[in-house]
Amino acid sequence: MTQISAQETQSAPEKLRIALVTDAAPPQVNGVVRTLKQLGKELEQLGHKITYITPDRFRTVPLPTYKEIRIALGAKRRIAQLLEEFRPDAIHIATEGPLGLAARRYCLNNGLSFTTSFHTRFPEYLHARFRVPERWTYALVRRFHAPAKAVMAATPLLISELEGRGFKNLRLWSRGVDTNLFKPKPVTTTNSPGKEPLWLYVGRVAIEKNIDAFLGLDLPGTKKVVGDGPRLDFLKRKYPTSEFAGPLFGEELAEAYAEADCFVFPSKTDTFGLVLIEALASGTPVAAYPVQGPLDVIADAPVGRLDKDLKTACLAALEADPETCRAYAMNFSWEACSRQFLSNLSKRSGEIDTKTSKGPTPAVIAP
Image 1 (tube, one colour):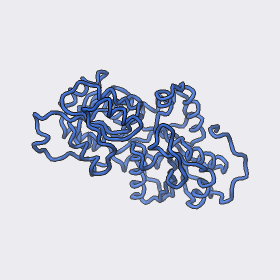
Image 2 (cartoon, helix red, strand yellow):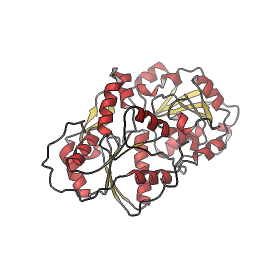
Image 3 (tube, rainbow, N blue to C red):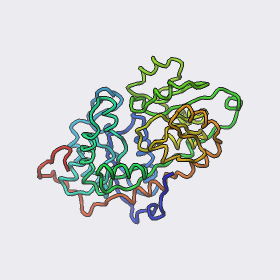
Image 4 (spheres, helix red, strand yellow):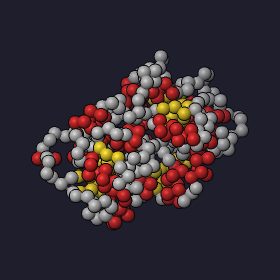
């Protein structure tokens, strides 16, 4: 489990105006979106003022092969306008998409410091979908993050990996869970011993999530998938006996976690896996591969099982005690994670120039 030091949880001495720039936003359903939404809530509770710069404030088009994701168009001028109107004390760029590129360019043109975060393994995803060599994409991603005063990553293992790939200025920013929303349901006859197990997956329904490894298992009971994505129709046809609930939110999502007997996490490419602690907070044990994400969150804690054989992990995870799972998840505090985020921010030393920059525009991905 990721530990947060006392120094990292110190609150900033003054209240800040913070701009969060992200290409990942509702109606997308993923851990990045939920993380940034909860982060904003926590920061506002701490007295800071937050603005989100997201695709819904721009003209957009659907991402090819992934229509659920909208890509902002013509972001350069609008990004400048939004930042100049808000006058942030700190700018955090959460994603490497069009909005992230536009905000990065604006900051560099105007001599403004900023921070970034590494949420998504785009090199692995592009390789899985289009066979693009990972080293090519990692070179671009590394150059995107290079000018940042801090590059935030969710776990020590991820930081170590990124250091090995040449990333600099890495800082830990862990994750939290809403334990008021995600909680166990009362024991009833519907979840009593002896009933057939309900196996649950929550997340994007995409090839990089390795969902076939879950749905193809010979397990007793019912397999349920919550989420949407480009592979949904394919999986529905391939696994007609499995249940596909589509995307769920709020109380409906919390209920899905709580009624499951085991949360199955077949991904081998996630940087953290927020869904892991959401499941544990719901009293639902986790079965996963022993890879980055599950290793950071669970390791050898008695809240599920990590195994190279996913079926073995699933059957063993059923033995975990729901109360132990819940107690373990309570160690992940969103307030502590938000204070850690604040400690990583880079404040501007001067005012944002309200005049359009006259300097040359750098190459899109070059620092």
